[in-house]
Image (spheres, rainbow over the protein chains, first blue to last red):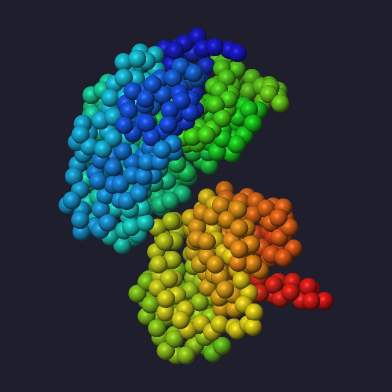
Length: 362
Length: 223
């Protein structure tokens, strides 16, 4: 097996200086699967910052991916604002009850105190610990859910969805208070010395129209991005699930530096169309390939993604299309990393085709 | 059908498509007051509007919020038309188990299918949404169902339909149970491929096919 000759931090630095690197950056985007890797129950991450930090660190040590993230689920901010979250013993948390059941109660919503509310203090302590231990080698980030997506969790997904058509004014009010909480989490994460990434899944064109994105999501997302930049965040990393091609240009305009796209989005098209304006990350299928595929299928899919994305002028990061399912086989994550190492540097079409023609695992 | 009834049915369909809940409600009231047939109002009016909304969704003119509000309008109309449905009477009630397959929580199609089955004289056991394959089979066994109706809107969950059929085969129930499949991504060729007995693009037609298939199956046993 080929091993890395650079740490992720060295690789990132060399890349930004235009110097040679040992391989393309790769981040399999492991979600709560870190619990399986480090031997915890997922619910331990809700109360034990040491467990959460340890799982992030162990996962990094096992795979050497280019980026670590202290992340358990999308409901951190909503919960801190009063939503009830169902927390199974060993599965990912889910929204049980929104913070308010009617828009008339919007004044009950309070902007979060990240040092006091919900599970955020646990996460903050974990961030600090991960940063202290491996922060010199690899980027450590907190995941901030986008203001629009978080607004859905405040009033309930179905209610909010209908409000887009029936009550625009209230949607804006919810997004406004949601944004303020997103900024508070950003502040607190940056105070721990870690970076931030944004997940804005409900801004997907699989869910809402580009028109609704521009009306309701974009203004608040833009303000969050501007805020992060004003606080010194150099690289704005954003993930949106599902279909996103109608809004790629919007994302460029609002200052996104790295866009992580889902497997149903066309990576080649993305790299061609906006790859000279932002780096592109993606987009191996997290379910059919990473979860259910064989090692060889993971290898081929990873090679295919590299072929489609590596010409992106602003950079390309191999990633899963979305957070990996909890029970993804560890050997598949390893295979994704190994494949990127197998490709090495420099990357050329000829090399990729040659590798593509070989079957390595079956 | 008279021209004025046809005209009203078209308006019902349009009102659902246009997401106009109040108009759908008003039209449904007038439709019933005029003494028109409720079944046609549902299948050719309300459900047709919803089907057209589905097409708009596929064409990326409509998105999830638009579909949700269309379905609200459809349900407003259903609440008014449904009590006026005439149910066909059978000596021996046919039984159906319906549900949305595991992994999917969209149930508009399933709900329509259920209503249409009821008009055809079925007693319907509704398992709801996100139903694991084995539960369809267990319920069918428990109530001695003639029909299992499987619905999904998502390509990712289609395979669970085949799982249900495979379990039925394993348990030697396939020959006595009609399996109907339906939903956005489902086609006749998919139904054929997984060995389902029936498929129709619309819930009303699908319910009629279900009844025919059950009658045929029962006849073949008598002979």
